[in-house]
Image 1 (cartoon, one colour):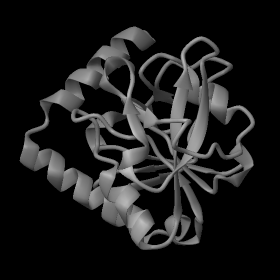
Image 2 (cartoon, one colour):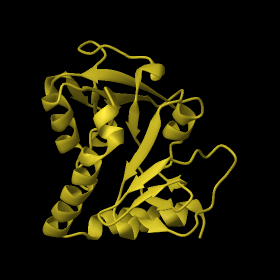
Image 3 (cartoon, one colour):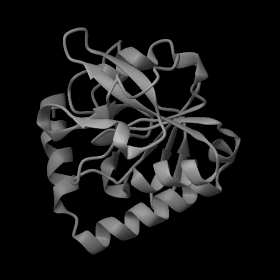
Image 4 (cartoon, rainbow, N blue to C red):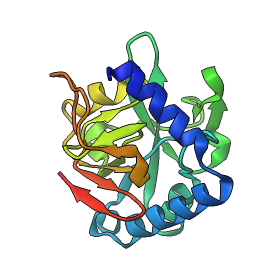
Length: 186
C-alpha cells in the first residue's frame, strides 16, 4: 500500500472503535504515559487539541495543568506548512480554524521556542515498529521534528501499529510508541 491507502485505512480504523472501546484504550494509554519517567521528568509538554474521532488529549492537558507542567499546543501555518507552539493555560485561548480544528489564538497566547519543549506527543494514524508514521498528510510534524531535540512519543492502539510502512528521506520516526498493551522504544 502507498501512504494514501495507509492514511485511509488509519482514518477508518479510528472511526471504527465503539465509544466504550475507545475510552478503555485511552485510559490504558494515558495511564502508561502518566506513570512513565518521560512524563514525570517533562516540564513542558507539547500536544495537539484532539478532534472527536482522535484519541482524546484533554486528559493529558488537564493532568499537566494539575501537576504544574506547561502545556503547549500547535498552530499550523498552512501556507508555510510549519507549526508554532503556544503556551496554553486555558481552553479559552483556543479558536476554531479550518476543518473544525482548535488552535491557540496568537492574540491570547504566548509562542514558545522549540528548544523549550521536553516532551512532544506526536499524532498519527498508523505507525510501524521503527517509529515511522502516517499522519494526516500535511508534513507539518516531519518539518518540525527535523531539528527537534526533545523526546517524542505517540499514543496509539495496538491496531494502529504495523510491521513496516513506506517512508521517505524526510520522514522522522518517533522515539517511543505507547499502546494499551505495549511500550515500544525505537
